[in-house]
Amino acid sequence: MSIDEFLALARTRRSCRKFKPDPIPDEWVEKILEAGRWAMSGANGQPWEFIVIRDQKTKDRIAELLLEDHRRTFQLERTRVEELRQPMFRRPATELPPLRTAPVIIAVVGDRRTLQASVLYSRFIFAEGGPGAAYFKNMANATQLMCIAAAALGLGAQWSSVSSGWEGSLKTLLDVPEELAIPTLVPIGYRDSKAAPPYRRKLSEIVHQERYDRSRFRTGEDIYNFLLHLRRRTREAYAEVQGAKSEIRSTKS
Ligand SMILES: Cc1cc2nc3c(=O)[nH]c(=O)nc-3n(C[C@H](O)[C@H](O)[C@H](O)COP(=O)(O)O)c2cc1C
Image (cartoon, rainbow, N blue to C red; front, side):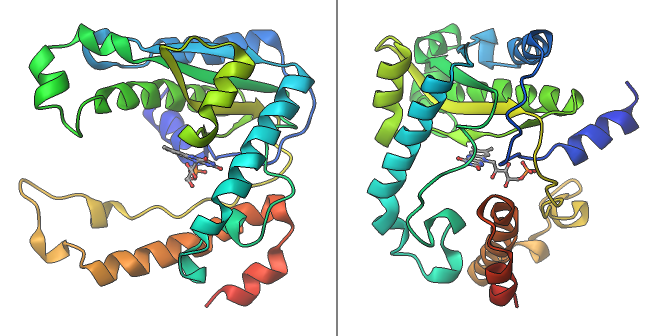
């Protein structure tokens, strides 16, 4: 693969929030899992294991757990100003994309005990990002590689976060041992929508040469405007699954 092909893949991979129910070949699922297996991890600790879920009843139950969590946290998100509120929290959801319809969900299971692979002081005492942060970074690497592998196969995939509000119920459903965690679910399948390219900051805004260029340091107001801009774009991304295009147009400035 050339660098240009690789960059094209990096640029065109999109989070998918609407799937066709059509099954995907088992060999493709295997290839996606193989990509996850080769992810980087601190001291090669490899905290990840994967549960491949195809059973419709299980997917339905997972979708219900996410919805129940949404209902529990709904009022909390509404404490934000409306313009910064996550689109799925603008009104109580009756359905959340896309865990029910994707033909396959990969539950990314993690084992924090593997952090012991690395030097003790760097993991627990002076850990970058606090104790345990390396575990999440390792899990993220495997998740990202699987999403990229899905894109290379022409499939859609989504990084679907599992909050502590419903992780326990999910672990019970999937019979995951106490010691392990499920930070992320990755639904995978054929796209049933064409996602517009999301906004990315320009290289000229994020790259510094030799030293940090403080003239480009963003103020609090810059960050607020950035978040506002992002939120408008998030609404566009969610419109494909909510059928809320007219509402989005009316909130755009
Ligand atoms: C840590 C993390 C958590 C995420 N959680 C969710 C999620 O719960 N639901 C969702 O729809 N997308 C989730 N995403 C996907 C992001 O929203 C998405 O990557 C971002 O908007 C950029 O769009 P793109 O993936 O199409 O480039 C998550 C991504 C990351 C890295």
